[in-house]
Image: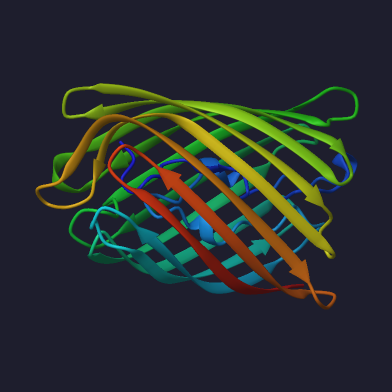
Length: 286
C-alpha cells in the first residue's frame, strides 16, 4: 500500500545525490528506501550527496496540486544530518496537509559503516493524522560495495508499515548503484510489497540519474512505475489495486561554500488523479 505514494521514493533517488568519487564515498544511504512514508519527504528535501564528512541542516516547504477533488498537498519540513567517523544520523520532521488530512511526521535513521565495503541503514518513524501518515514505519537495509574500485553498490532490505485504519504493509527491496564517474551516479531498483487486509501483492521499479558534485551543483532525475495495493485518500475513499507512474527532478545549488538552495519538481499519475508541484528549501553544511 502506498499511502500517498511513497512508501519508497524514492526513492530513487533523488534522495541520494552522492556524486563523489567512489574512493571518497562516505556511504550515506539510498534514502529512497528509508523513512519517508506517505508524502515522501525525500521527494521534497532530497538528502545531500555523500559529502566528505559533512553534517548539515535544511528547511523548506512544498505544494502539490491534486486533480479529481481529492485535496492538494502542502506543508513544511526540516532535516538535520549529523556525520561521524562510522555513524551518520538523520533527523527529519514535517507538518503537512494531504487529501485534506493534517498531520505531523517524525523519523530518525542511522547509517553505520562496518568496513570499507559494508554498511547498514536502520530507520524508524511515525505520524499523526486520520489516515495519510502511518502510525509506525521501520526500514532496514544491507549495502555492499562491489569491484576493485568499489564503484558498484548492491542494496537489499525490507520495510514494515503499520498504517491507519488497520492497514499494514510488508515489503522487500533491492537496488544497484553505479558511480560511473566522480560526477555521474546511476541507480536502478525494484520493490515487492504485500498489503493487508487481503495480502495484496504489488511491485514497482525505479530508476535515477544524478549529475554534478557536492559543493557546486547537483541535478537528479528520477522515475518509477508499477502497481499499488491500497492508497488511503479519505475515510470512505480507499483506492485499491491500480497502476501508477511517477517522475521528478531535484536541483541543488550551492551559492557559498556550505550554503545553498534546493528546488524540486514532482509529478505522479494514477487512474484516479494526477498530482504535480514544487518544493523549495535552504540548506547549510559544515
